[in-house]
Length: 228
Image 1 (cartoon, one colour):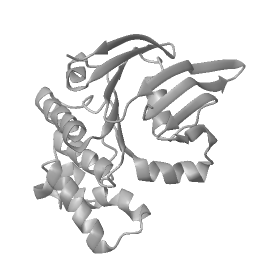
Image 2 (image 1 turned 45 degrees about the vertical axis):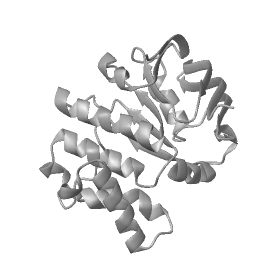
Image 3 (image 1 turned 30 degrees about the horizontal axis):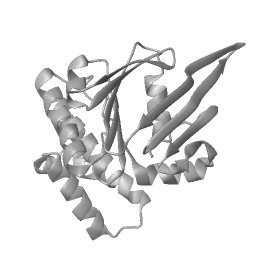
């Protein structure tokens, strides 16, 4: 049984009298521990699919079952609770709070959990050490390079020990060296910690770190490649 199963998954939006359908009856299975890269032109449904898997959005048709839970059947509150436990999100532009230190940014998701200050400290320290940025814990985002900011963002994504990491263009704003560092880090999280990763990218080089690549066009899968 697949860890993530999409069956006839559809997402529609109304724009005036028109119906926009970024996902159109998508069928997809993602096994636990997969590192999936999603490619395709703008408007192909990549980020829509990512947001559905992350529980940020809800489908308008079909089903999306993750580890036995059909997200389409969850209320808004239950979906938010599920998301805080199971999902870590890595954004292209980091989404760090500029007035908080690296430590405080990583702490934010833990404030939704019933943990003591000591427990939060241990988790934050472990996450920062894992991404190699512990020596910048007291630095503000403006004092960090882009690559360092993204590593803080990844630490924030993994601090709750989620099952799934979703990454939306995680190297899109980085130079070549920083992009390589970030992709190596994601690959390590996948291979050593067994995190299931679903990543949207426009850069073919980043797909070399994934276990497989799927191509979307007009809300449907059009091609699949498996890494050697």
